[in-house]
Length: 332
Image (cartoon, rainbow, N blue to C red; front, side):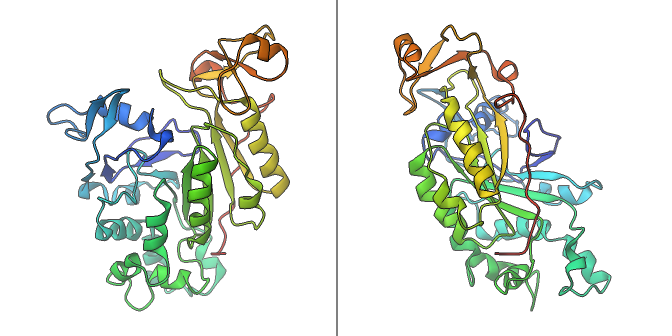
């Protein structure tokens, strides 16, 4: 596993390869384009992609990479680890048993505590839990089904943790996985309404939302009001087929997070950046996401966006970077 250029992580860990398209946010997925470049005979992603109307896409098959399960345990320096950046841990084709093995690796720091005869009731036991694991999914319903009290994952983990499994501790409001952050990926109001309420029901030390690619305005306040979302990531779409966002979507995300005391992370503008010359841009985007005209721009009804590429568009939102991270806490 390698270092990553993904702004909110330092490492990626991919014990699962392959995925399938779920919603509009998947249409131009960077991971399936990257996987297709390594899909030839004998390559890591052989047989996992196909060519569709918009270019390479996942074909729905997944591959379990057993030999990668212990890779994070070899990293001596604590990392922020994006789990399955090239897949989805909660893909329906991933066996529950394998998901349990992934969670077992993430909980391995507790074995060291046991060897030292730590008192797991004490807060000090959880101050140094090694890596932070960031799990992002579009399959929030299955994640909840697995992680709820008495769910299938608890049953499978009982073999590793007889009598006192991390999940059993979680349901007693004890910090079982203080180093595992669970998040959902959303792109518009529809996917936010479907996935975020399920995330809020899922036991987790830290919950986060990744709004990338941002494809429409989202009313976030109802999801943020109870303090159960700890971080919100916003990002525009990248790649040759990227759709331009409206800048006000990013500003609204920032403002609502600041008002709710939720950590905000501005990942990127993506392929399209706000026009800076105030003379009109390559495309004109209305607040509802539809494309407008230059007349709409001059009337203040649309934003001008230029196609300049991810690097040139940068990570500044109104002149500054936003790189806020939550502090892990006990299950809420």
